[in-house]
Length: 542
Image (tube, rainbow, N blue to C red; front, side):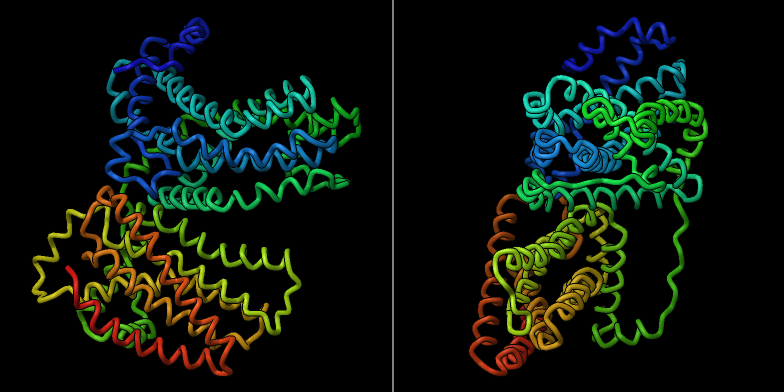
């Protein structure tokens, strides 16, 4: 195994660990193994595109940092320009804390919640102090990489614009923030594990991973807009509740040292920025035994809850799914969509993106033109909500537990039409339609109820488009293939399947703008096409 430059750098501080009673050679060996294993882990940001080929290339955490560097450019106007430090640096540290903490939960959870130390290292003659030191350094190494990636370019620009004192103060503050975030995250886990089981914690981590991916997907929208805030004359006032705004703690020292503001709140917040991270370290050290005991819950399997029988849902299900087999596969697919974490991690960010992007385009139109909502057709941006469909339909054919697909062959089934219909309907009803309904309510509030026929057209068009995507992507049996079989060709197929969205939206715009009852006519045509597609096209394929 190759040696790591990080460990060679750590060798220069060997004497510090020895003085603290840590067996440095053992700690170094543990770190070496952990860092080697981390190279084989696909980071959250690349998990949506993780194919077999990409895994063979061994995407490491270091190789994923460029996206954090790109998002970190948003900090430049806040750090490098202007002297309203309390406002600017509060925004800066709010962004930094959010980025680091969400990434801490998304990508460092396997480090902070590493139960392998208990099951493997605890059986060896290794002191607990050495194991804890290895875990702490493991976290510190990755937090250092992440912090440098996010802040390096803004810091360099700020060095020339704001001076050396600003630069050194920011570096010192970033160290304190990293310490504070580690402890805050550990306490958050501790509280969750105190009251809930390990499965709930894993779900929370999964949702944070989804949120991180979503934020980074839409973050570029704020990159250019942030420069509009540089010359704003903003006056911030302190209130008693400001003490709970953590970013203001770390922004206060800039006002104290660079602007000479010696008000009570500025001094108190400056003291908080130093004292609170130090106190948090002491609290963390004291709570380590409790934390380690609670980690045992991660090894426990929670009992599955018995599903409640709902007559209304059963009646609706009989209308949606006509046969017993289709209803059975609908229930099965619904459980898979709800419980499989890898599927959610790959699909839910796109689901959130499809919810946000119609508003992004709508706001862009509002910024450039005066919109008359009584006659405007900009509500057709709701077609962008259909962007989730190709990705989700592609992922429906794959599963982390694909080896269990042998059960399909054990069923007395002549063809898999009911299985296909059940899985696609489960996706539409459980994932797409809830997003669509919320979007429709907002759009109706903005444009009025006159757009209801058009919204029905989009709903029916999305059902037709789902079948088009399923046929276009090869109509695989649901949940029967591993995720690493998703190849570049399927990625291009998914991209090309965006063309039908443009065609459906273009026809809608033309008919609705040229004919009085164009939307109603188009709706009837789409309903007829839907009946034919769901009845005949899904019988084809594998």
